[in-house]
Amino acid sequence: MLNTLSLHHTAWGYVAAAWSTTGLWELTFPLSTPEAAKSSLLSLVSTEATGKAVNLLDQELKAYFIGKLTTFTTVVDWNGYTPFRTSILRYTAAIPYGEVRTYGEAAMAVGTPQAARAAGGALHNNRTPIIIPCHRVLGANGSLVGFGGGLDMKSALLKLEKQPV
Image (cartoon, rainbow, N blue to C red; front, side):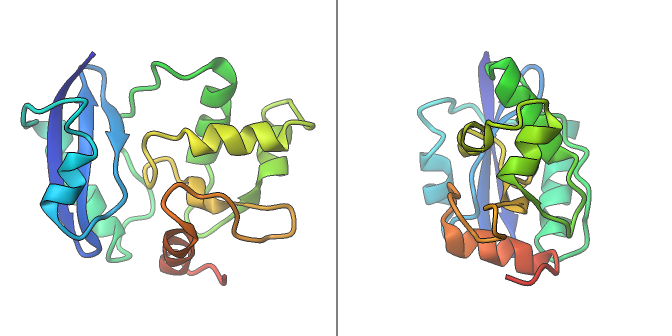
């Protein structure tokens, strides 16, 4: 059950987060105004979140967007994903900062080598981008493909992480 919303001002813009009682449920990409960031999640929750988890996410996002954080420790709520999506997202969460993998590698890593497209679909439904770094997954030939935040955002995130794009 979702119950709170937090807003985080980073060097790249405003990021909104929806929280459940288990952890981070959903995260927006950076947007130019607080209203834009909040509006995309207001249909889920409207009560303001506070506490240690919110403060941790705030610190981590701020540090990440200035290139000072390589690993997030914010707790993600994995409820609501199918077992396949969970396995792809957990695999993606473990891709080290500054490294990339392909959709095919992700599918193979979770035991479904013929499911590269399905891996892409699972990543498309990633509710917590940045924290689960789906931007680190590329097409078979290393190309930038399919990203919910847009290919410009994917490219910018990879450049932040010192990946040539």
